[in-house]
Amino acid sequence: MHSLLLSLATTPTPLPTPTLREGISEDQVTPGLLGFIMTAFFVVATALLIVDMVRRIRRVRYRAQVEEERLAAAAAADVDAADAQDGLDGGPHQAAPDAKGNGPSSGLSPRE
Image 1 (spheres, rainbow, N blue to C red):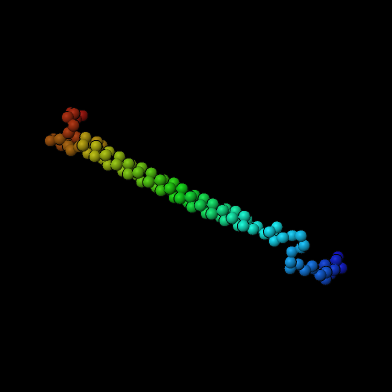
Image 2: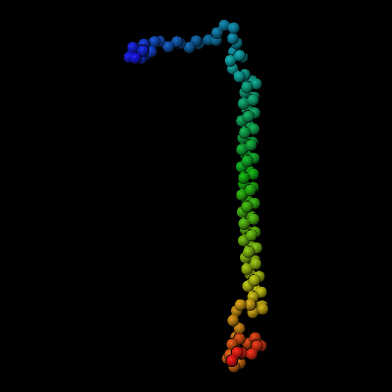
């Protein structure tokens, strides 16, 4: 095992060739103009999709926030209307005692 590691460590690695092999042109190994255009198209399309997605997410968040505020305002208006209605018809509030000082003055005779 030791001899195998030693032989792998001492084996020289091949040097890369500085030029292309014969029969191969530079257009065959580089993406060229078409590759650049396609890559640029995908980058621009991805950027536009990300911008559109962020815009849609903001719109959904804004609509949810407006809906929550609308519901809170409606609930507050309902509470205010209920309080005003209770104030008009006496509601659950205690009425003042009658002239004799007996119970509420609702027109009913007091129990004896």
